[in-house]
Length: 126
Image 1 (tube, rainbow, N blue to C red):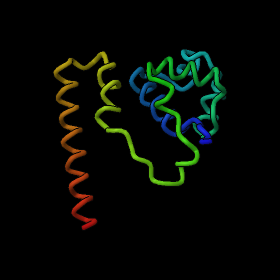
Image 2: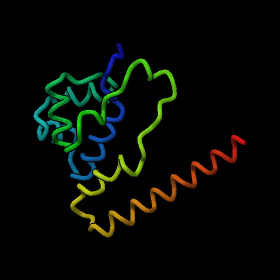
Image 3: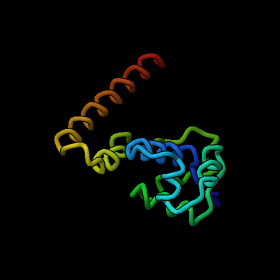
């Protein structure tokens, strides 16, 4: 049976992006989430949050918990990554400083960049 755990690095990165967006300190963000500042410090040091802190964090991010869950058995092997545009789209759409047309333009730019990166990678490998 696969063992699932929290992808602490991805969670911390998402929280850091949200903290930057809100122009808050880590202490302020911790207060907003409802956790201690030391919980945020432990997260920065790649230690897993407790289940209640994790729930509060994903709630603040307005993202599904599954976004930050990984299968420990597959961690050591190269896992198929979710589509980058599909993964970023909810984050872009949640931004209050972007109009719908801005979001669509950014999605197109990212998709174009990913397509180029993949083509370059395939050319190097062949």
